[in-house]
Amino acid sequence: MQDLTFPRISAVVITYNESENIRSCLEALQRVADEVVVVDAFSEDDTVEICVRMGVKVLQRKWQGYSASKNYGNENCENDWILSIDADEVLSEELIASIKRLPLQKGRVYRLDRINNFCGQWIRHSGWYPDWKIRLFNRTEVHWEGDYVHETLRVPSHFREEKLWGKLWHYSYKSVEDHLQRIERYSELAAQELFAGNKRPSPLRQMLSPYARFWNTFLFKLGFLDGRNGYLISKHNALLVRKKYHKLEGLYEQKSFRT
Image 1 (cartoon, rainbow, N blue to C red):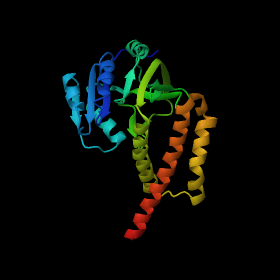
Image 2 (cartoon, rainbow, N blue to C red; image 1 turned 120 degrees about the vertical axis):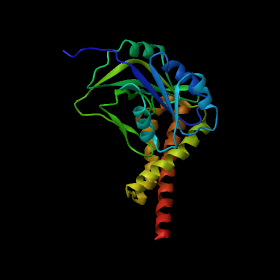
Image 3 (cartoon, rainbow, N blue to C red; image 1 turned 30 degrees about the horizontal axis):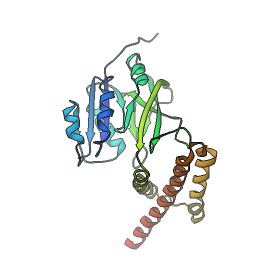
Image 4 (tube, rainbow, N blue to C red; image 1 turned 90 degrees about the horizontal axis):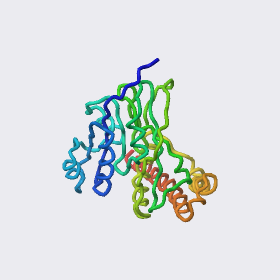
């Protein structure tokens, strides 16, 4: 039988202009982590000052993508067990208790039950929930991969995944405007990812995909059960797809002009 131990944990958070969120995030992390490391992409607000006042370790580094930033933070931790949390996420009381009594074992990764907040409402459908995320792992066994929009953990196929009790509160979008601003950023990154992979969907697919995304979110993923916000999320998902393909075509036009 494998020995059960309670090793020390390092929490890693990446930030850029997160002064509105970072205090709540760090207060919860400091209750479970022996060390908190913040990797900041040269924030222009009070993010760094807040982190310093709270006594966490701050590393400033030019933004090079989600995976690179998170791996950089992991590499600069004192402990091998990493709790990876975003600046707008907060551990619930139940999740804090789960982590505190958790006997961590190598060969395992641990999933957290994340629930997302949109304009003050906890979204329980629309493809946003359930939203289990692997966030607790041993850095000697797994690492972050992927560029542009989505970072993922490279986990060996034989590893066991364990789900922890308690919510990870994700205060993702405070307003409709906030969501729309994020869509601009994500659509740009998604277009760059497709362009880098030399991918260019047909005009028909580009035309139909936004409609498909809307109905998939609103109907098949039960977005209508989230009420008005479910409709807005469905609508914005379609807008993201439309903007992604529009920006992708712009990149190919630039390439054609240069050549």
